[in-house]
Length: 345
Image (cartoon, rainbow, N blue to C red; front, side):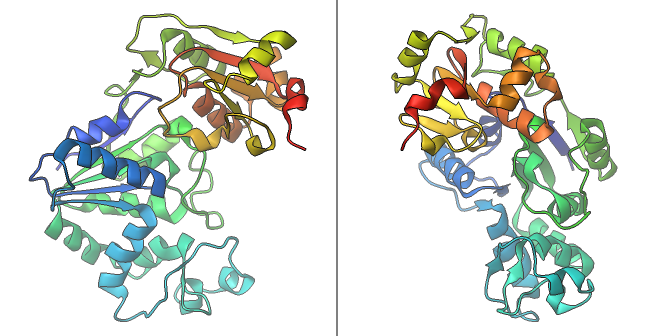
């Protein structure tokens, strides 16, 4: 069966590629990291079919782990009361051996979120889980795959043995969050794109770098800026030009900041400012912005001025990439220090 990882650039129609693969009689499992994206996928399926067909199930990742994987197979042996998302784990859990209950379950009977996948692997649940997937589904789609980390990444690789079509979709450079972390488990997973691809290939996945390499959202102007300055290759389906510029004039900054149709994107603490604002990383997956103003903090402003944005800390660079590629229209940059009068008291 086809096992494929499709690396998509921002605005290339990643979600549409999943929806377009579905038919009313599909037997398909769709898993994504966040609740927001789960709701978005459900909405898109309903838009297409008028309802969610009986054979199509859409899960947020931890609902999938607990409700589909753990409880039906392990729940009769291990009685639990939900999931503990607190991190880091208590010291006793960190020091515990991997074949003990306290390694996976807290004193209140809740599973540690970052070790559910590990439990399934260590206690040889994977064969039963694969049978369960094969019983109900012919295809599996995993969205936002770049955010799957640590034991969760290992679980995805283990599921590649299932006799179903598997398609993993994501943008490596939009890795801004992790499903979980657990000590040194896959700690360097996202340090190098080539090594990341090698791990997926080693599990049986084919790598597709071309199907979703062009953006519908961003113009060539923005794609060129991102490619040249962030070192992230993005092409465009469009042929129009837009403005991509740094704005330093105080009057022009006022015009931009007082225009609520232009979203102002901050590295952090966007709620400390008036108007239409958001944090860079929190806009991932959003597709409703036209003109965008990216606010540069001291670190990113220095990198911008020195033309070495590609040397930023990877997480910071990825969040900046997310912010820049929200723009369907013009892209403006301003310095954070120029916006002090717009801070809330």
